[in-house]
Length: 96
Image (tube, rainbow, N blue to C red; front, side):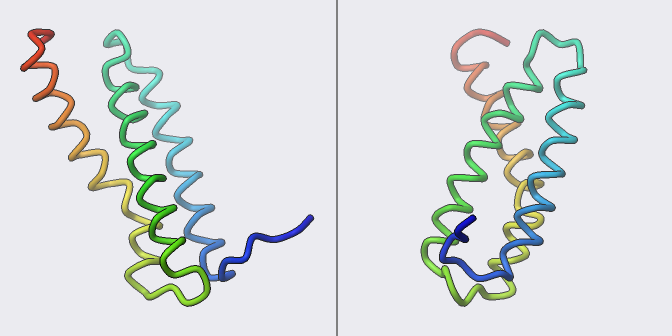
């Protein structure tokens, strides 16, 4: 199997981010709120990986320590921002 042309330093943070997102996705799916929390986690997932792809694209061979930490732990702030933005948008639309 051919490797992507990115630094091997990205391997561990990407794996940890995927594992964390799988666990949170399963837990969010188990909450009986009509899918609201799962939708927030899905929006955060798309936003996080969009940012991670841009970050890797900009520094494919020489990631800084901040790049590695953002990929490893960046999902936390994205989920909180996504929660507040989703609630605000739902409020504007009259859903909440």
